[in-house]
Length: 277
Ligand SMILES: C[S@@+](CC[C@H](N)C(=O)[O-])C[C@H]1O[C@@H](n2cnc3c(N)ncnc32)[C@H](O)[C@@H]1O
Image (cartoon, rainbow, N blue to C red; front, side):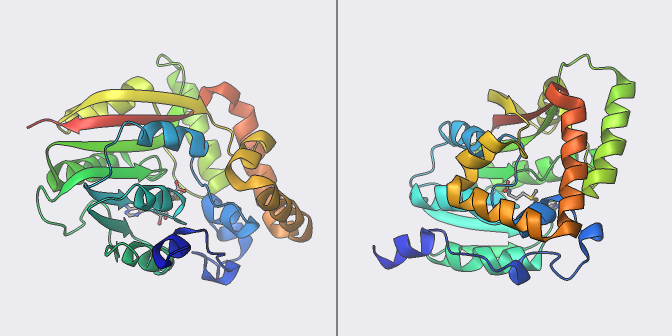
C-alpha cells in the first residue's frame, strides 16, 4: 500500500477525539451518540444511497468541496476517485482534525467554517457534496447553505445532497409537526426533514435543476444496515458499547423508538442537482 492509500484506509478514531466527547451522553447530539458507540456512517440512507448518488458525479479530475464530512467515510470514497482538488468544510473543530490529514494526503484541506459562509472563491468548485447536514438547519439555514453551494460552484457544476425525507408528499402537517418535535427531543437537534417535493423546491428556488433523486429506507439503527455500513467487526464493537454504556444505550433506545414510530414516513433521500448558469 502506498502512503496515500494507507492514509485513505480507515484509521481508528478514539472516542475522546470525537465531537462533543466532553459532554454527558444526555446532552450529546444524536449523531455523536452513535459515533461514541462506534458508528461511522451517520446518514439516513446509509452508504448504499451515498454510492448511488456518487455514481452520478464525475469526481476524477474535478475540484470537489464536501460540506460536513463528519467522520470521513464519504471523504474516503471521494478521495479514492482521484479528484483534482478536495476541500472539506465542517463547523466542528474535532471533525476538521480528523479530516485534515485525510484531505492533505491528496493535497487538499479541511476548513472550520459554517457551510453557509465558507469563504471559498466564487465558481471555484465543479462538485459540492453534503450529507446529513441540511436536515438539521432551519428553513433559512437550508436556503443559506444551498445558496452558498450555488455561489462556489461553476455554472453547470453539480450539487449532491443526502438527507432525511418525509413520505408521501401530501403528508399531513400535524404529522410533520409531531415528527419534528419527537426528533428534536430524541436527537437533541432541531431536525426538519422535508418531503421529496419540498427538497426539490428548495433546490430549485436557489438556482438548481434536479437531475436525479433516489430513496432508501431510514434504517440507521437497523441490524441489516449496520452490517452493510459498519461490517461485522463494527457491529460487534457497537453492540459491546451499547451493553457497557447505559447512558448511551438510553439515548439510542429513545432514538430507535422515534425512528420505529414513524416507520416508512421517514426516509433517506438523495438528489443530484445542476447549477443553472
Ligand atoms: C450527522 S453528521 C453527518 C456527517 C457525514 N456527512 C455523514 O453523513 O456521515 C453532521 C455533520 O454536519 C456538520 N454540520 C452541521 N451543520 C453544519 C454547518 N452549518 N456548516 C458546516 N458543518 C455543519 C456537523 O459538524 C457534523 O460533522
